Amino acid sequence: MEIYLVRHPRPTRCEGLCYGRSDVPVDPEELAGAAASVRSLIPARVLRNARMFTSPASRCLGLARELAAPGEPCVAEELHEMYFGAWEGVPWDSVPRAELETWAADVWSYRAGGGESAAMVAARWRGWSARLTSQSRDLPAIAVTHAGLIRVALAGARGLGAELMIDAPFASVHRVDIDASRPGTP
Image (cartoon, rainbow, N blue to C red; front, side, top):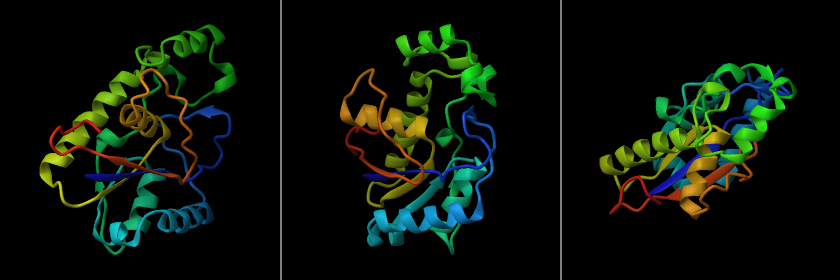
């Protein structure tokens, strides 16, 4: 099964912040540009036939609505960004250096800010993709989501283990093929 993971457009007024699950705005011009770019990166047959899913965050929902029009995307809580706990809304340079170093040393297990670990995000992804695959193996899917979820999905798909330094720019598109005989695994 083809799943196209799309990162949301660049939000406004949050440069340098750990915004995680915080609901941050996207400029309408940025949204329009992201929608046009994403449409050019996903095959037309997929855009016509895919089921559209989105994180509940408004920065994702707006783009998903543009891509799904005239239809409506399905909101999936599992597609939300990693929860950064006490770090949410805090400037990255205010997060204690020792905590950042601990996270960097154990990115899969460390619960950044007391929130979620990458392993927890990966479990959400695997559960969601397994349910999606079991519902329909024939139709492709598009999921508008976040860098954290995209990184763990791609790390699993590429067999990278602990490596999460995967580039996932704003409005980027990443294809993952899920093996229908083993739902939840690439």
